[in-house]
Image (tube, rainbow, N blue to C red):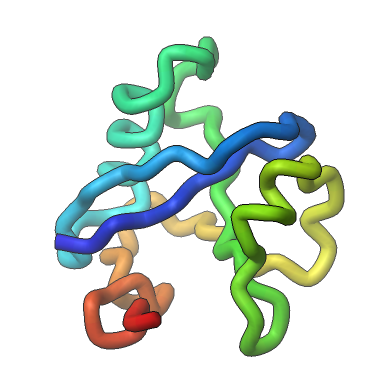
Length: 96
């Protein structure tokens, strides 16, 4: 199980946490995000996800609070069937 801190592009405000197994897929993550955030009105399949990391640096909660509007340089999580660990979203790679 990993804790992913999520923000919404174009919306300033606090990050929200989604708990998910790293063996689950990007499609499962879309569903979990939709379930955990009632402000999201579109179907999970329409969510465009990005790894909030530029180079080796993760975006901070301060970045999310200010609002992120530019996804340039962020890696899209665009393979619905790919396990999250293939995007380096695992306990091992997410240690702070």
